[in-house]
Length: 406
Image (cartoon, rainbow, N blue to C red):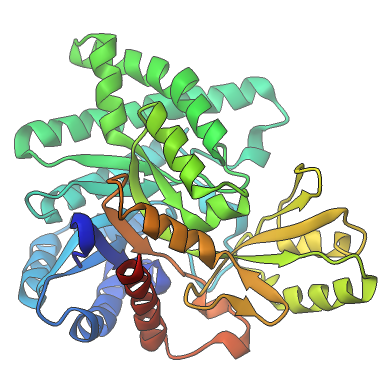
């Protein structure tokens, strides 16, 4: 739905389980018209569509895409952003580090993203740009012990991204529609923070992908790099950058200073907790965190010590045994908790960073795509679960309230 400053707000349909197109569409039919009637009864209502590879292929078969377009028109809905991060199963199974597979060094990731680009180019309304959020190239622990392999993965990723950009350039020339890949940094991703994003763009993407575009399209390197900056952007997930202890103002300013655009802002909150010196109080924190150490998703933990240094743990379940002896003053955990709640008894969320981001957007045009992305409803502790439709509505209402008061 369109909100202030020509921004568009939606929620990501990765909330709902289902990897086939029939399952995806059944969830859209069940939830989206009801949400529209509650939140935007008169104006068009946007959808942030998550499609697994299987669903994307099925949507492109027979007359499915045309039928979906007709349904969108009938219900006064529109699609302006896709979630192309998880390739396969994402619910009710062990996902963990396999959410990064296949990564950007593979042809499977290219083919999947090309299918998503074809779908988005068809569905995207005139006058809007369209983004496809995607993984931060790969999973760092797979490659970081071998520098040669690490660099090979980066180079292959650049060439594969460039091949998708070639198609996006063709789509723009033929339709006038601007599509972009939105790389989503997160803890333990191959690019996980602002410094690594900038390093990747300046030392890998622009020279390597730029050379590919220059030769493929017979254009100057400088023009190729300009096109890359238009079609390869960043997905700023507020949870992820909060877990990295990065301030929104600083991230926005640093990316802008080197010409890197933000294609989508995913509105999500992480768990944070101040670590007391008292051992008994630490034991209470361990017990409070334990229900969040579930087996479906990775919940990376980053602790910050009093001198500002950071220590990473690959998952909450492996981090918990270290908490009682930790030298940290704070822990932040990659667990997308509901954004409309700040305090969880002993724990808190990084909700304040979301409010800061929404306030920043009132005074600049850093990004026009906003997507609520709390996808962990199925694995939340029992006391935090309520009716899903009401939960999604409350998330929207909290965001809209913050925007109105900014």
